[in-house]
Structures are given as C-alpha cells and as structure tokens.
Image: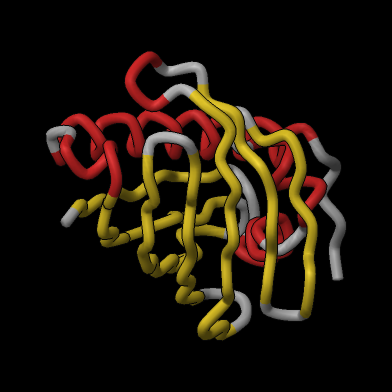
Length: 153
C-alpha cells in the first residue's frame, strides 16, 4: 500500500482553483507527461501519461472517477493508472481551504495499491515518484492561476 499526503499553498481563490481542477485542458497542461486528457462523462476522465523515469518509464492510461464533489472545497476521487510496468489503483481526497481572498490551501491525501512489476518496487520509491510528480503539477497550476487575470463575481 502506498500513501501520499501534503498541503500546498496557492495564490488563487478557492473558486478559481476548483474550476481548474475540473477542466481537462488545464489538467492536461499541468500534469507532468500528460499527452491527452478528456472528460468522458460528468464524473469521469480518461487520459494518457508518458513517463521517462527509469524504473517506471512508459506509456500509461489513466482513468479517474469523481466519487464525491462538494463545490468548491472537497472532492473524493478514485482511479487507475495502467502501463507496461504494472497497475496502480487508488483513492484520493482533496480539500481546498480559503486562507484569504486570494490564497487557498490545497490539501490532498491518497492511498493506492500497486501491482505488476511496480508492485515489487519499494513503496517509498513509488511514494517519492508520485510526490515529485504531484508537486511539479501543483507548482505549474499555481503559476498558471497566478498569471491569469482575476475576475470578480
């Protein structure tokens, strides 16, 4: 079992961050190695990620389902990542907490089960790779949101 959790500050409103999290074009742009991402139903997303990290290099299909969404502060997701070195099946929760008008904390926690050749690797290695990829994506998203003009409702 793999476990990841962290909190990242964003220079954006909770509403702007929430909208970005559910916009496939934005997500495809900020997810490291993402080649495509589309919304296949109101609660489902599918895509493809290509990783060049030695032990986990390859092309992976990604399927994500939104199990629960309480706009604009909470969502619970489940999904599968499958590729040449194995499959990762897991769940994650995301909590958005407004700190100030233009500051939001993004807190995530996830658990996953790893199978195939990936399952023989150290869980710490997999957690490290996952954490690095998530942090890269969150930094890209923060930069993107900070560069977009703010709109008032």
